[in-house]
Length: 195
Length: 195
Image 1 (spheres, rainbow over the protein chains, first blue to last red):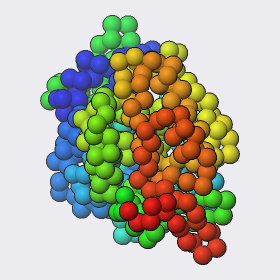
Image 2: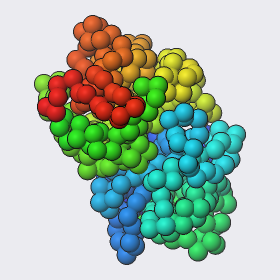
Image 3: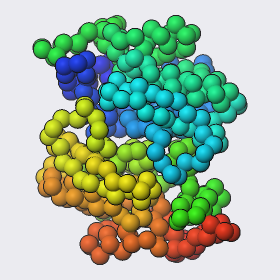
Image 4: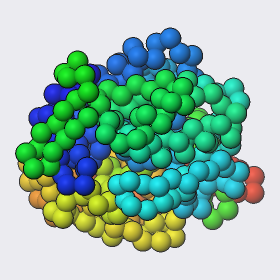
């Protein structure tokens, strides 16, 4: 998606340790106009899919998922990091290794909000090693729900997550795939150029 | 806001310990159509204010803030729970006592995303004792930003937060204020009836 790639080149910051900071428009400050364009693009990419729910994970996925949900006309369910006393015991859960935070945590979705009739689109901001997404896929599988596809804003193409998920036969659409980035000169190379 | 109150009566669940669960439409599964109506109402209530940014806090505030931001034409900044190695050192922070989680945590906003020129509307899903909101107000004050107002989905009117904030002279608008709720029969009383 050209608009997102241009924004990454303009405002993204490459940091050591394969970190790309997009916090000025995607996951700390959020450009809502950009999210709307991304939502329209997700709708175009998944137009052929029967989707009745968008599944994401707190916190950075929520804004992208909520804006996109307007174009699908469906509710959003976000997986919660397990700590709340407000969550009923009756949940599906998955353990996720966070690349960013260098630790693992449990995420949960109430059994009341995902089930065998659901055909979900999973949306998240980043795809790196894929652990968060595999956790969400596991939760959907536990619930008997069908994963129609995965929509990602920024995929780090030099990490393994994209290949793992595509090898699973999942329809995975990333709006920008980065194949190479260099913290020394800040350069970023996209898989399909600016297309 | 009548639509929200009707939804709370229909789908909210009163639990012991002053807990109101609205997780089927507001903060676990999210009804995007409802959020759009709430966004329009926030815009109506704060129509006279010059707002250039919406400030919220992860995770439950993000969806409400992002959908509302469409009606204000402004970006969203969400305060992050401090744990990420992806956050620069240059942040404003506040410590928050969580009523829900019975613990305290640090939230941060990058100094790059809030400053003296900002006139912010703070949005969150719940107002109970007000600690989360006072944390956000402190962050805005540290940044020299002006808080134009606070927009809340559900205020627990029987807890102290609303009175504290109104006594500070802040324009606080809650779409539903609950004055009484009873876990035994599930009854809920709103401050202004169904208006």
